Image 1 (cartoon, rainbow, N blue to C red):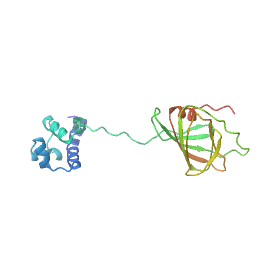
Image 2: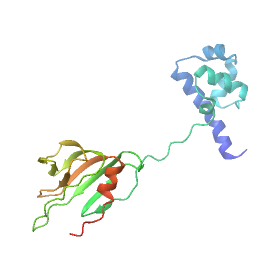
Image 3: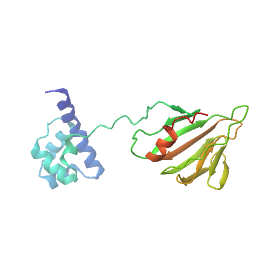
Image 4: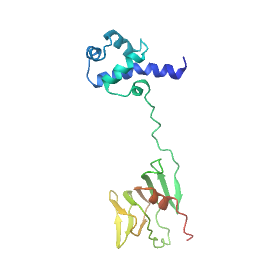
Length: 196
């Protein structure tokens, strides 16, 4: 018997015990519901007996789970996001999500203005919606007719079809969390430098 099959069969017993305990049932109650003897159920749960299809079908019905959930539970992939930071126009973007087709989350670090001062931020417009939260420093948000400063702990959300720009008024770096959809992600992270 190959190792994968042996591991799958070995995992069935603990899974059966877990399902029974989750429903707060005794072996006697499961035996009555399935027609499988108490001793057989006990040996299945402890791994002393290899399950057969005639055992698994009534157990799956009793516990109201698909048969494949009893036989093979998919392993969860590593949940850690290991994407490398991106630097664009002096800003560093730390990806906090993997799936590029869904809502994107980034930690963004905007350095302080240069000694000579930064040029006025260029207002951008694109499809999408953005949410941001200031972690450290102070953020300047220009949004349509508004010119706002957001401090640590403040959040903003806005339609990105309104002309907007994010900048750092200084004196130190600003760190923020931001969420936006694919259109906003392309605009903020993949935009080419403007040649200034």
